[in-house]
Image (cartoon, rainbow, N blue to C red):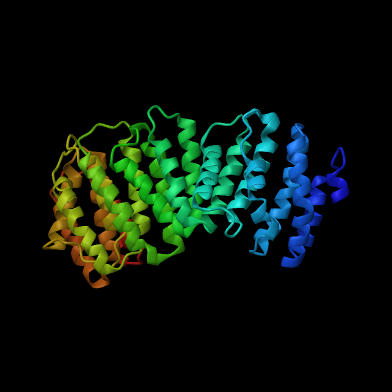
Length: 429
């Protein structure tokens, strides 16, 4: 290895690095021997050469040596004494252009910085923060070669698993701050959201801080309205992954993510946003993923304010111009996600379903009509078999007095489908 590293041209640097890695990771003793032998040569050659290809090859070999210390969770003794040299090797060289031709050099450098962070007790808190900021900027800023952004994001995901606390204090504020910049480009927002989503999904401890940060930039008005939909899509995907992975996290997700979003969309219901429908769909899907996993008692706690907000709008015929009408799918989503044992906060469920049927048959709003049909069908489907006949009759009695038409046919279609799906013969009748 020394013969190769001191030659004018390093042949097969990847193989040299792998051989050194295999030897060094076999024991702490061998790790010290390899590091003592290789580090001085690399430091000396890095200081004396201006050839960028050679610098990348030397850095690649050094990365393998550092990786051995990470694998055995113990830094070689010489790394502490030569820490300043290591920091100089991986420090950004302003003379190297950030274009595709030098992307491999930048990626190799970022990998080395990551290893310095992972090495136990090598960097102090300030040095670690600076190193994390360097990798974060590589993930955030536009590079000529997107592979630099992708590699930086991958490294942040790796670091999130080993340094979750420092990630929250150093990396996430940089991402959220960039998201809220004035006139931030769409492609940059997409890159930021992809990185945050990857970090959150890969690291359970980082999931909630990432989600809470994204919810905060929306609900505080810091995020531009044009970026609401992609941000909510990222939140929804993360919430679905978290809820599917662990039911125990759902109460916290409901309290810190879903409920603030439900409160926010209700508070801005009067605003006329062109993507209102997509926003409602994303929040509804996220809410269902979490709400359906809650216990009966907790579901009841969140259902009460939902009925207070939306029940009147659902029962007011021709609420086309009502600003809350477009939010009714949120209302039906929560009801449909209820457990069969969850009690809806109404005085008489038969009267309530009949009133919904009457509104559905008379309204001109397709949103309101479909929401009423969905609530009726879901309630019938989840009702006890001994109650379905009575509930169905209550709905049909209100429908008999209405003018026959498309809505009348659709109502019977929804009823039949709900009953047939739970093998109730009344559905076939």
